[in-house]
Each structure stands twice: as structure tokens, then as C-alpha cells.
Length: 193
Image (cartoon, rainbow, N blue to C red; front, side):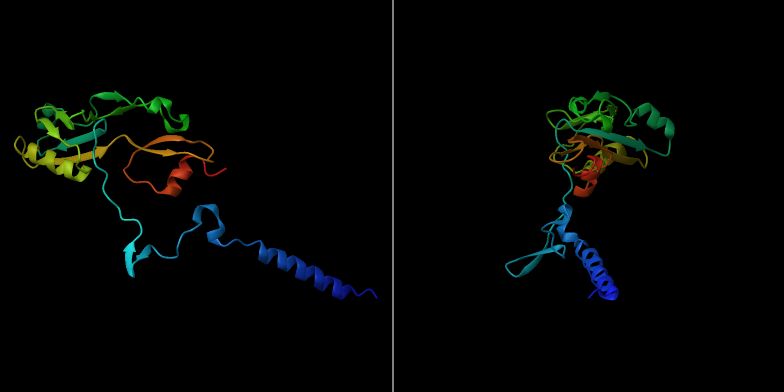
């Protein structure tokens, strides 16, 4: 015998079951597979940080932007260190992605094969193997010999990350900063396909 209320109940239960079963747990999403609920890993019964951050070390062929300011701005102009000199064409950038402003010149000081940069008046400074904060302090110590209370800024101008695989725009991306997460890199590459 036909019962409309039983049919409605079965239809409601089916729709509710479909809605509840279609919800995804975050661990089933491709980005978060095999991610633990903690930022710690356990090794031999001891908790260790899963992703310790280490500063990037400057290497030959890196490009550094160096800025030095002092109390007397005319001295800085005489020294000529603004980080805007020595336009260097990045050879890998021209092979990169068009969405990455790949064909632009990068302003700064090229670290030579011996690991030095040459600054006007300050001369050669060995920076290879140092982090940008260590290089900043080393350049500051040299600038103290020439200027009163110099403020030094050092930044890596050609930090690159390469994204390969099933993304919309695989390639090498030059970043304006020295840190990037996996999700940020995937976002730059147009997300997973």
C-alpha cells in the first residue's frame, strides 16, 4: 500500500545521508595527506620540532640588495650604496614563467665565485656562507669605519622556488622575500590541477 509519509521519510533520509557522506575531512584533501595533528614528531620517545627553520646561506651568484643610511645623507650619496646599482639580468628568469615577471632585471650586488660582493668605498666583503642578518652585521662593521651610526639593510633579491608537477603553471618563481610555504608556492603556480 502506498504511504506518502513513508516515502517522504525515505527521501529525506537519503538526502541527509548524501549530504553527511559528502563532507570531506581535511586529511582527505590532497594538500593535507599524511599530516599529523601536531607540529611535533616523536623519535625514540622524544618530541622534536617537525620543521626547524634555518636561515638561508648566501652563495655565489646570489644577488644582494644592500642599503646603507647614516645621519649625513650626503655621505650615503657619495658612497653610492643604495642597492639600486649594477642591474643584473637573471639568466634563469628568462626561462621562467611569464606570470612571474621573469624578464625583469634584478638590482643589487652579485656575489662572485669567491663569495664576495664589492661595495663602493667599503671594498670587497666576503658574504658567502652567511645568512642575510650575518652579512648585514659584517657590512655594518665595515661601514662603521667610514660613517657615523650607519644603518644597514641586506636582502636576497633573487630567492627562487621551483614548482613542478600537476599545477596550472609549473616553473621557477623569483620571490621578494626569503621564506615561502608549500601552500604559497602552490598558490603562485596556480594551484593543483
